[in-house]
Amino acid sequence: MSLPSIVQIGAPVLRGAAHDVAPERILTQEFQDLVKTMIDVMRQAPGVGLAAPQIGIPLRLIVLEDREEFLTRLSPDELRDRERVPFSTRVFVNPVLTLVGDETAVFFEGCLSVSGYMALVERRLEVEVSGLDEHANRQTWRVRGWPARILQHEIDHIGGTLYIDRMKTRSFTTVEQAKEHYGDKSVTEIVRSLKLES
Image (cartoon, one colour):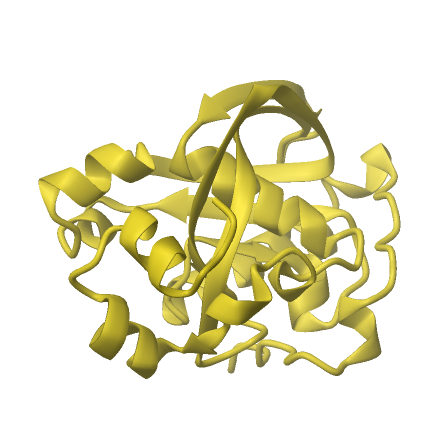
């Protein structure tokens, strides 16, 4: 069976608020199949997160993971600056996000639904998310750094918000241009070169 395509910017489903999932629905075969499909789509892309609206389904459901192999593309300095660590697959149904503290960080962010582009986005450094897992059990996860960024990005999706709504607009670029012009620069240097407020 072929996997669904990732919905691209302009589709109304990406701009509406997704619906809560009734807890009794989570253990149905249909919902379990949906979770598996979303994980498969995320991995095939490949990406580190996916929200149900990104495959055209307006439900408050996200999946995320950051595999070790993705981290090998970054230098030790980049890993440290991003506070990026691998984590296994997580599923959140009806997630509720709580921002922790006032610390923020600015990094380039892309999106599978805005294919081929990226921009600098300021996000909170630490968050806590609570909700149900794929077995309808309550869970809470408090994280900082890159996992916190992924959570904020995916939870934005289920509220109809895309990273382009939060981006530093002067930094919006194609992935190719970003690699060519900013690949060897720190975020501080990029912010300065684009005359952005840090």
